[in-house]
Amino acid sequence: MGSRRSARFGGYRYPCRPAPYDKAVLLALGVIAGYIVGTFPTAQLVARLVGADDPTTQGSGNPGASNMYRTAGKRAGVLVGVIDALKGAVPVGVALLVAGRPEAHAVWVAAVAGHVWPVTRRLRGGKGVATAGGGGLLISPLIGIACGLLFFAVVKWGRVAALGSLSIAIAFPIVSAIAGRPGWEVAVGAGVAAILVVRHQSNIRRLLARDEATV
Image 1 (cartoon, one colour):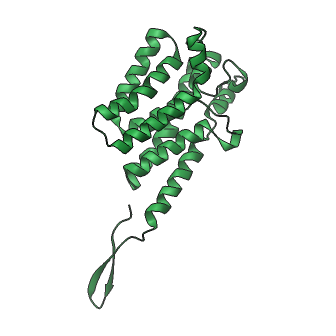
Image 2 (cartoon, helix red, strand yellow; image 1 turned 90 degrees about the horizontal axis):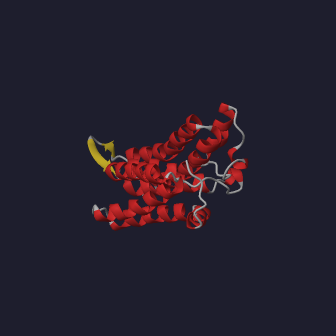
Image 3 (cartoon, helix red, strand yellow; image 1 turned 90 degrees about the vertical axis):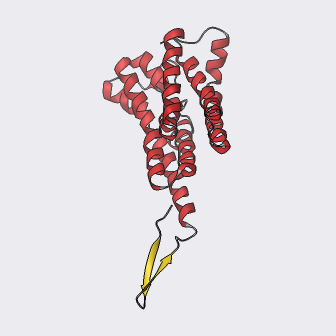
């Protein structure tokens, strides 16, 4: 964080250390920015764009890619998925460029939290899968790609988006641990996975009752 600066006095150059609060300030700004980006109401705006009804009043009521896919069509669902993934990828990518991996992980969690619990919509957001996936892809590209392939394989086999989402939520921290990532990174990944699992409680109940909607 913060580049080393120097000052010249009497012909000599003395290195100036970054102010000790620089890192904390950047971290706080990154977390706030990540959360704000996460609150962007993708599904509602795409629904207006394609002339569809508000997704929170249709289907499962979830403002996410899967519900949009079922209620507004393939194009709308894919568009929501891509934009929601960018909500995680963009802030995480910026954090990686200007800060480091610890800050990027904090921004990742913030972006997912913004999508799941947006203050702009009384904390009633989406499930967070695409946003978590976009951020995870930037944090650990190979693991992110592997989880993406797992998602599509599970959905193609079972025709249930929630099953694919739960599979990658559980797989990401496990694969991170197997790949030898630092313990704190695995812990953050497990925390994000826990958020996704909690947000899928209703889906889990329907899966157990064999009543979950297919795609």
